[in-house]
Image (cartoon, rainbow, N blue to C red; front, side, top):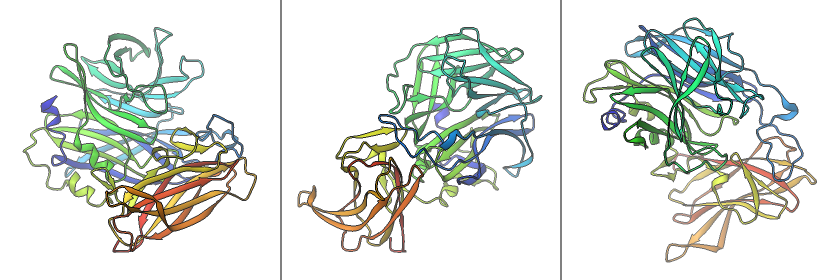
Length: 481
């Protein structure tokens, strides 16, 4: 793997295509651009859908969390778009785009090509399958569709398959833990498992029963190894890309590299690898970057990077380096330390002083009075004015107000610890009830005179109140912030 990872460095990365978007409620949003090279052209598939408003029913079911369901069960239509590009002066220029009408409700396309043919695998819901999922095979040249069926009825479909082509035959890495390869007949859509190797990856995600490490891009064959890009899902709002490799002799190896952290520190906590392919001169990597999970309004970045196989070689003079591109993106953290002038704190990762319910990145009170969130006890290093905006919603509303949102500074003891008995309230506001609709409460506060003290956010939930909290976004309000 060493020769491959030495290519994927920040200094060697060039941006050949990128698209920035804002995902807004009730407007169209695009997700998961997957690329391949077919002949002299490049192609991409991506999913489009209207971003639904974050609205849930006004009543709450104990020990459950319905934040993934929309009010009245509104059905959201998804479309798959195929785009064709040419490379001009080191950058991709789109030639044409079309909606693929043969694909209905497909999602998260993975595309693979051998330069002559290209196929894509997508996923959709299927109540008749083992796990409620199904897979679709799309021929990029003909746009014909086959439903993929397993010879064995006991295999879960899942998602995040990583297709590859070997000697004209289509395969896919179906899962990383255990490492499993399936063979797919492109004429019939019939799939069968041809290889499986146990590995010891016993770490599971915090919000579902699947292993932490999951697929991402398509697979390539590099020398004598299978190589791909995957993602570790530590939370529904955090995807951490990695490189994996597998050989029959040594098994599966997973490696996290610094390249992807440069996106994290610019505010993209959910990063999905979408593409991995190479020609004689370059390696290409596609990424789909989000501030958090897709249900929320947020900024998004879709990007295709190019790496010179000869890492000491020079790219095209018209290319923008990734290092230069990222200079236009705000820095939200450095070495894991949040930048108060621009940061998103996830409530699910902060402490609580009372019992709560938590699922899919949302923390919910269960009617007990107390602080369902406090922290992060960030050392105040700059004086200035800032804002803190809490995203929340409430259910089972009985009163006009459900709790309080506070910003507090805590003094530092001589030994460097926190003096919890000396709170200085910088801002405070009651939280109005929302009847299941996501709302935001913004507080403006000043850190003047609070250098080296600790910053704390608090969300207090009243007795019998059902309060669900998502995140707190901070911003600097003036130049000296």
